[in-house]
Amino acid sequence: MGLYRLFVALVVLVAVALMPLTVALAQQANPSRVLPGVVDNGETFDVTVNLTAPDDDFRLVTVVDIAPAGWNVTVNLTWCTPTPSFVIATGNKAQIVWSGPFSNGTPLAAVYKVTVPDDAESGFHTFNGLLGYYLASPEHIFENMTGDFQVFSPVELHVIRHINETLKSPNMLYPDDTFEVFLNWTAPLNTFSAISLTDLAPVSFVVEVNKTWCSPTANATKTTENKVEIAWYGPYDKGTNFTAKYKVTVPCAAAPGSYYFPYDSCSASWLGYYFAGYGPYTSCTIGDSEVVVTVPSDIVGETRDVNANELSDVTVTLCKDASEITSDASTPNYTIAVNVTGDYWLRGSKDSYFDILTNDLPPLEPLYINLTTLDLLAAGCTFDFEGDYGLVPRTCNVSYAMISINHWLFTPIDVEENPHPEWQLSIWKAMESVHSWEFPS
Image (tube, rainbow, N blue to C red; front, side, top):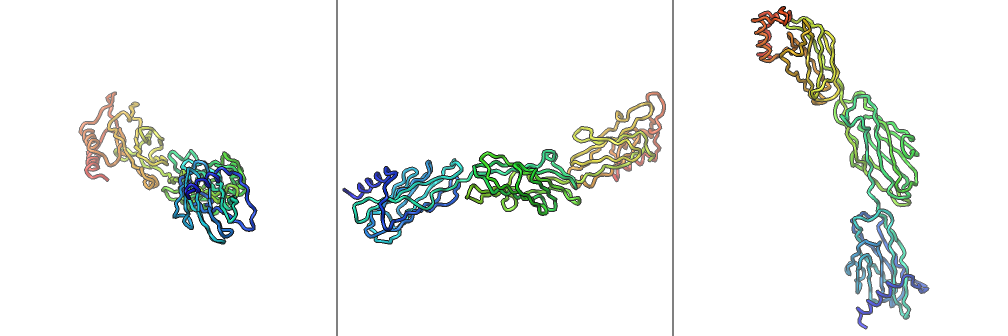
C-alpha cells in the first residue's frame, strides 16, 4: 500500500473513532491544545497542538482537531514543526499527519488557523480533538486532547447615554441647573457579573448618585468631583435590562458655551463586566454627549415721543419666528427677559388719541435684534424707542426721516379733524430725524 493510501486509511479510522480506547502507557504523548481566550467575529487566529514522542519509533502520528461548527479551518505544512507529511482542512476540521519515526522526547507542534464567522453567536465555543499514533507494537494508540478546549466570542454591548428629554430642544441649561443622565444596556449572556460603570460629566460639573436610582438596584456607588462610578455584583441572566441614573449640577460660574461628556472613549467613560470566569470586557459609552449652557439676559430700553417726553400706554412686544414671545407695558422703561438664542424683533405700540391703534399706522418695519450666539445672548441688548405715532428707533431710516419732514410741513389731521399732538413736529425735530438717518448713532 502506498504512503498516501495509508494516510487516507488512517484519517478515516481516526474520524470514525469517536470514543477510542486509550492504551495504557508508562509515558504518553500528552497532546495539549493552545487557544486564545477571546476571539472577535471575523477574526482569524492560530490553534496549536503540542505533543512529545513518548518513546522511540513514534510514527504515523495523526492529529485530528475539530473547530466549532460553521467556523472555517485552514492548514499548511510549513506552519507545523517538524514539517508533516500531509495536512488536510475540511470545513471546520484540521488533520495533520507525520510519518516518522521520531525518537523518544521529540517535540511536535500542529498549527492551523481558524476564522470566526461574521455572524457567530456570542458565548463559549468548544473544540474537540484526538491524537492517534503507533509505537513499536502493532497497537493503534489514541489519546484525547487536553489543554484549552473553549474560546469565548463576546457580543457587542452598547452602552447608550441619554440626557433627560426636556434638555434636547433646545438642549440648553443655565448656571446652577440640575439635570438627569441615564445610561442603558442589556445583558448579552447569562452569568453577566462584576459590572462597573464609569462616566464623566464636564469638568467642574457636580455629580450625585444613589443606588436606588438604578435598575436593577446597584450594589455600590461612588462620586469623585465630576466622575460617577456604579457597581452591580450579579450574576444576571441574558436579557436583563440595566438603567443607570445620576444627577448633574451646572456650576454657578459656568460660562456660556457647549460642554461635553465623553463619547466612544473607553479611557473616559465605559462599562466593565465579566461572564463567569471570563473577562474583564469593556464597552465604550455612546449616545448624548453635549449640553449647552447659556446665561439668560434682558432686552431693555426706554420709550419716548419725538420730543423726548416719556410715553404712556406703551406696549413693547418681543417676537421670534413671527410669533409673539412676551411683552412689557411699563412706562417709560421696559425689560423683557430672553433665554434662547435666535433672531428677535421688537415692536413698540401705543394707543393714540381717539382710539387709533398705532400698530396700524406706518412705518411698521421689524426692529431686528441679533442674539444668535451665546455670547450675544449673554450680553443682552439696550434698545430705546423714539417716535411719533409709530415708535421707531433713534437710528431711523430714510422713510421715517421723510415722514418727519412731511409732518413738519403738513401737520396730520385725525379722523375727527383734530390735530394729533404727537404729530405736531417742530422744524428742529424734523431735522433731528434727518440727522439720525444720515448719521446713525
